[in-house]
Amino acid sequence: MSGGVRAERTAGDAHRCGLVAIVGRPNVGKSTYLNAAVGHKISITSRKPQTTRYRVLGVRTTDRAQIVYVDTPGFQARPRRRLNSAMHREIQRALDGVDLILLFVEASRWTAEDEAACRRVTGGAAPVILVVNKIDRLHRRDELLPYLEAASGHARFAEIVPISARLKINVERLESCIVALLPEGAALFPADQLTDRSERFLAAEMIREKLMRMLGDELPYSVSVMTEEFEERDNLIRIGATIWVERDAQKPIVIGERGGRLKMMASLARRDLEGLFGRPVHLRTWVKLKERWADDARALRRLGFEP
Ligand SMILES: Nc1nc2c(ncn2[C@@H]2O[C@H](COP(=O)(O)OP(=O)(O)OP(=O)(O)O)[C@@H](O)[C@H]2O)c(=O)[nH]1
Ligand SMILES: [Mg+2]
Image (tube, rainbow, N blue to C red; front, top):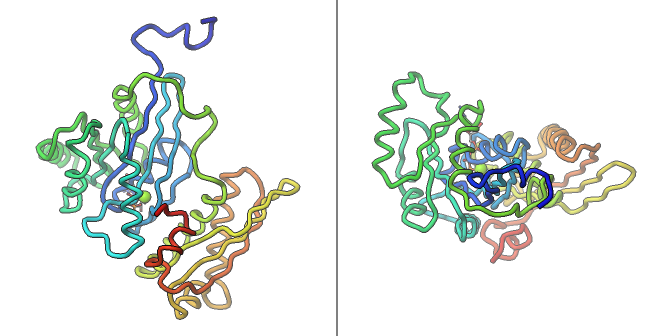
């Protein structure tokens, strides 16, 4: 081989590449970590559980490795609606054939759902790293050690790594642990590719994130977003998206007084999308009634869930 990075490597540090699933109960910070690890906002986040509904790939490429992360919906012990079952299947698909699993929990808590997620992912072929997130929330540093000791009793983990995804504490250390456990192999994606998801998908998700963040506690679970138009012309991206609600009474809540709330959400989403695409975006949104979409197999297929 002539020159280049590869020739300079010694035998001990061959290029590594693999699929790494990010799994855990809702709201533990899985998507926040994905974005921190990749360095771009690819997966949406919010304070409310069940923000992520789809598998989302995030690719982190360095000169010695490529980590292909798969973010997943939060693991729920009992899926209720068809939508939740579809989300469960997304987790299942993410786990198929992965090289490594990151099980996310929150520092100082181990709930029944954490336990269920732990049982689901351990005992398979892939090694599991327990990631203890949100350590910045601990009031005292000496709370961490007993928690880590107790956690190590729950299953056999390849590593236990405490981090703060939000403050990016120990994220590099976690990355080194991941790379050490990946198989040798060539990169799966070009170095500049960040995700497998289309721009249409990302547009719908950024809008849904604002709905998750700005609507009250129940309503976010009743809305879905579909990109209907996506057109690039003269350095401008024109996007048209429909927001589905389940009941007529939900429309005015999403739209807000004189359209104020919808305008605000669209404007925040537009700013995110301009950051992501690096070009000006023109965004139009409509709110439509689609009764019981979350229990409707056809509607879920249109929203991109595989049957
Ligand atoms: N204090 C603190 N908050 C965090 C940290 N990581 C994530 N969060 C917050 O926790 C909340 C949930 O984060 P997400 O990344 O959406 O969690 P998730 O696990 O992807 O949630 P689902 O998609 O619903 O399963 C958000 O408000 C984040 O800002 C952290 O390290 N410290
Ligand atoms: Mg998430």
